[in-house]
Image (cartoon, rainbow, N blue to C red; front, side, top):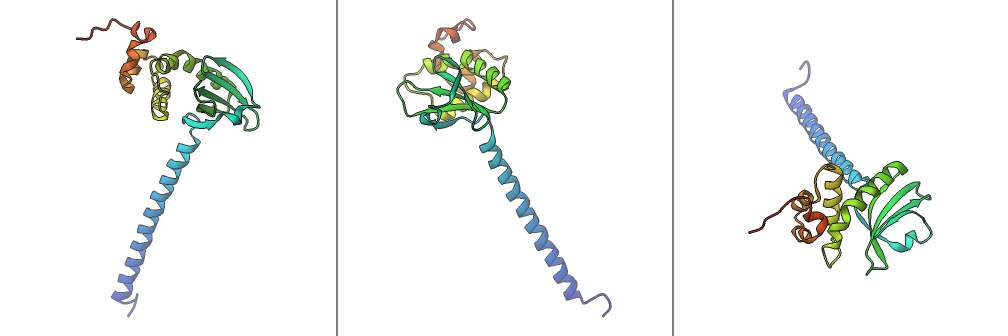
Length: 171
């Protein structure tokens, strides 16, 4: 039989389908790995870190509970939010490789984050801090009141810096 039998052609089609299915699987797998890598390499991912790691690092700026460190061993600038009641760990708000970006974001966080952590007795959870910092960067023109509503931190409306962004009447 010239060109092979019908069974041989069917087997070839099945092999091609199997290869295509494997390629789709590997494509999805690589996409997932890329997303996970981005999650862990995102310089603005909020992360709990041991304060002991920063004992020998240089403090570039410090305002209330927010500290900007020069992390020369990693060639980065790290911004921490410390909790005065926890001397063991802090939240790293970002870790960037550019001093200009570090100072710019540090100044933004000092200005905008303080009313939120001052409004609550308990420290803000990591997930809430992530939402806040993402919101600050994504919507730099939003008022603190707008951000409070977006993130669902309604208790923060008791803070004077958030209240002054508009006249609010609650029934």
